[in-house]
Image 1 (cartoon, one colour):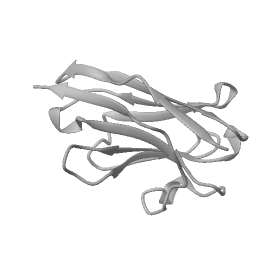
Image 2: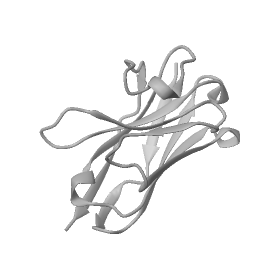
Image 3: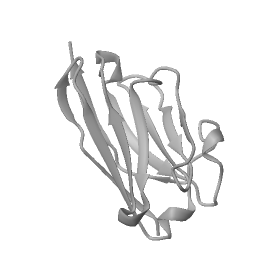
Image 4: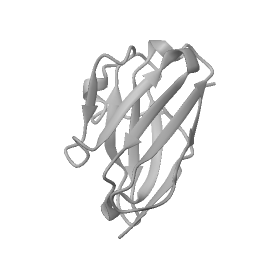
Length: 126
C-alpha cells in the first residue's frame, strides 16, 4: 500500500518561504510522477505542481509559477515543494499525491489521483 506523508507546513508572514516535504513508501518511488495540490478554506482542491519520475520535467499552476519549485530526491523517496514569496492567498492545506499507474506529470492537473497524503497546513499572514 502506497503511503504519502507530508511535512513542513506552518504559519509564516507574507513574503516568507517554506519548504514542504512528501515522503513515500510502499512502492518504487522513482518510477512515478508526483504532484502537489492544495485546498484553501471554502474552496475546491486545486493543482499546484507536478514532477516526472526523474525530476527532469516540472509543471506548475499559473498562480504559483515563478514562486514555487517542485523537486524530488529519489534516493530519499521524497518530493519537495519550495515556496517563496508566499502570499495570503497561498493559505491552504497542501497535499502530495500520485497515481496508481505511471503517468505523465504534464497532465497531472487533469488526472484523478489514486494516493493522497493527509496534508500539511500552510498559513500565510498579511
